[in-house]
Image 1 (tube, rainbow over the protein chains, first blue to last red):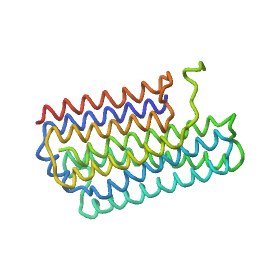
Image 2: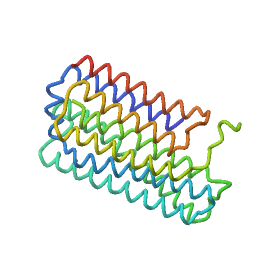
Image 3: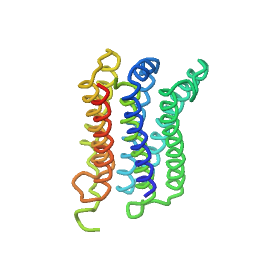
Image 4: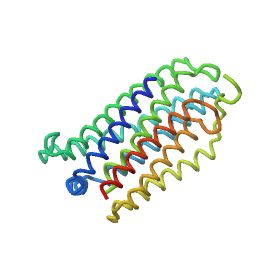
Length: 173
Length: 94
């Protein structure tokens, strides 16, 4: 239910962005050109890779290989960290140029949407960290690994949201 | 759980193929942006790539492919409804 609520919020956010853009096409198109699509590419590849690693972690624990699952989780968290570092670099660049929520309508949406997602990545990292910790303690097995499946579902949700956010905010114009 | 909604074991090779497909679709999306292609049709193609990638994540990484789970419908509807609304908004703006 928690994931469902999160997905609904992002769906509303994306729709409002798209309809607001329809009334301010020139502003949104010109401001979009100021974004770093290379950083967005790296972040998209990082999240897709982390989702693959999380899938491998779930597959490993279903085979009762907790040590493998633990390592896949750590690898997924590393890719999540790559996302956070690259995204922080983007924010730093914007703030150095005096860009903030009040700069214009586009940046209000861009900063709100991406920061909201950024917070979800942090939350996902905390969840994966907790799952990895419990994995190391021997809490999961092929028979009982509900926590691993739930954590993986949350992380995939974070990934799917970014897969729509990336083209919508950075590419489509 | 009935047999229809029991998660199936992951088949790693198809998931790895899906991973490569996701990377290639992402690179194609980035390239379209880099080359400066724009317009409604280009936007809809890029949006289509994103929605397809979402389906692949749901089906292969979340293991929802071929099972009768409410979560499969949640993912499908979450991708389709915003996808349709974004399409309408971009069509209006064009």
